[in-house]
Image 1: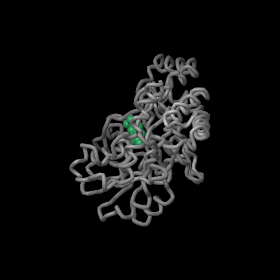
Image 2 (image 1 turned 30 degrees about the vertical axis):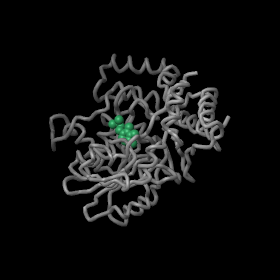
Image 3 (image 1 turned 45 degrees about the vertical axis):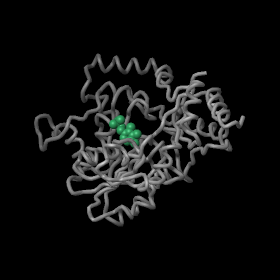
Image 4 (image 1 turned 180 degrees about the horizontal axis):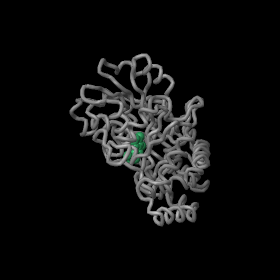
Length: 369
Ligand SMILES: *Cc1c(COP(=O)(O)O)cnc(C)c1O
């Protein structure tokens, strides 16, 4: 049996007629840049999130960068983020001219350890980028309280958390703004790069929109110098076609995770993912911790089960951050987990037989059939 890590074609086949029609419509109308598909997607995504504004941009990395710039974060400032994430969560801080300050992860949930946040705050700290990793929100209530107490701006990186919730609130609206990626493999994915910003702050939304469109809200009226970061019409039409299905897809991921849990829990040698109480984990990734992880990954690969590591190196230990002078001892949990985490195949269309096969191979590796 072959079990891919993700299967983007399964979703295309399910929606093929609608997607093909949407693409043809954009081309026939010449609605490549701007136009009704982009504005309709912004309206529908904002309303699905319960946000006042959605500003579409070219990708999830730009979304974070644009938010930081429009919050006037720059040279001399520090922004706190998490040691275990994709590099967008920190490279954008540097791009804005500020300095990234990394903190370790919470061992239970693999995302930013809220108990370490206060200790990382200095008089230069301006903001916190809370990353909702793997589909599960971090302890956003506690992080929000600390940000309020210290007058820090809170930004949520929701690239892995479309419609994830905690204590009844959706990812992206607790702080000043939330960034999303619609990279093809994300829970809501385009057929190329795409992203957006959501916020309830009217002025911030307008500034982000202006900055992302060369500093002009009206053509040729450049108030400032900006960047060119747009969601294109084809991607918007594809996302509009997919948006009505996102809840069903997220539910399929949740039930797949429950099936994995029942098939895998109790296997000696592994720890299955934990869901925070009151949390809606949308399982962008299904990450186990495994003894002899590299051997397990090779064994699974040989059996046709594709896995990945999200992420193999804590951000501050990458060559890009050597200048910070950090070592594994500064991030003991992330440094240890980096050798243990393994992402198993996870996507809505995963079948019961595929999951049973994956579990059988994992259990077989540990001699626990
Ligand atoms: C995917 C991702 C991003 C960046 O999104 P792009 O659209 O690829 O630029 C940012 N943060 C996290 C946590 C991600 O997983």
